[in-house]
Image 1 (cartoon, one colour):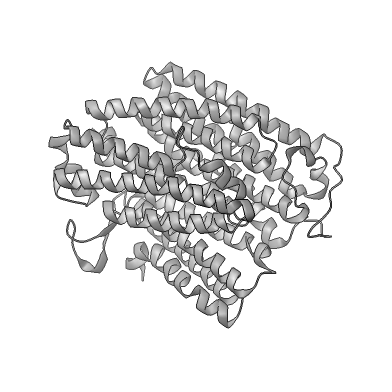
Image 2 (cartoon, one colour):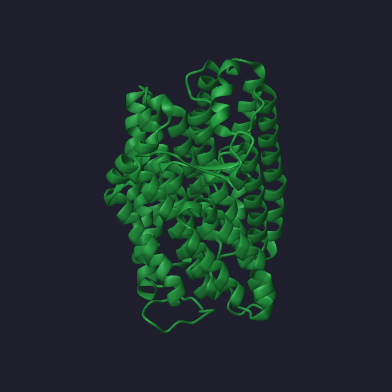
Length: 497
């Protein structure tokens, strides 16, 4: 089975998702258990792939679907970089799937089965986008991710329907632009295999058609990753998504398109052509605007979820400027921030979901004294907030450090100034949360789902919150090992010359 580990990352949750409704009809919880078991299997498969790729010195594992060799056949191409991201996505998916159980506990079989079907398909779409080696196959997984995401957002309640519909309209434009970009590249090169494309596209990097394709990819992926000013769908989507799935949506759904953009820029197109240089300048400008405006908008919010949504717009800006720097440290910083931000933002949404589940409250100014009622959750929020600000030894410090090194190495000192300003703005609104949790007088809240134990929440919710909080520290302590032993093993060719 080990030789089929790459395809099992996608195949296990896909099969379980397709069967989930059937088993849920037989017994309400059976379908959800099967999906959760399949995600655990996908996580173990991803770990197997990562171990093999790293121990082989970073050699890419090419898995041919049906035994058909590329460029005619479809392949999964796993290097150290996308292998660790597959581990990341499946791990967070596994944690959030467990966390979701109390939210659907009182629902009927149709809602439970439907929820876990969509959840499993979202995992399939995200993993598929990360590990595929085929441009059109990436579009297929992009649509699987999007459609399941629309459904999970729509399950959040009354206002969520409009948020999901808005995302559907804007997201369809993004997917269509990506498909147009594929069409232009196929017209130029006659191939859809990424590795083959990297060789065939070289003679055309100065052509107008190539420039149009680049524009389509930046706008298309920009919409999907909520890059400013293409983020209009995101605040409502994150705010009104199903509270059980919001942590997975906010933590991972923007990271797969961000990684896909990195893959196109550095592994397929490379960064040394005039067209790419201009495209990266535009990407950097958008990233800077997102960092500042996203942070300012976050400061103005009183809804915890909406504040985190605008914070994500700023954090995506960090990834964008890392890509735009076009040097080794900027690349490392962008990849590391994808990993770190997934943990940080997932942790924060897990906690606010727990508060909403117990008290039905999301107002920042109604969280006074929460440290006495939900101790583990408030500790995790504190760690995540400090990490978002960028204080050591949390993981957020190290990705920002590499981004600053990239800006210094490339003599792009403006980026350093923006990073410092954005971090200070982060400190303003995240210290406000810490103040509410620990210093303000205890708010009088009515418990919707009372919990008498010391944990403050059901164990199925507390365990993921605790694990993600520990993960923020672990990623900080082992950031050097992650960079040295994994990220630098999968560097693109442009940095190896």
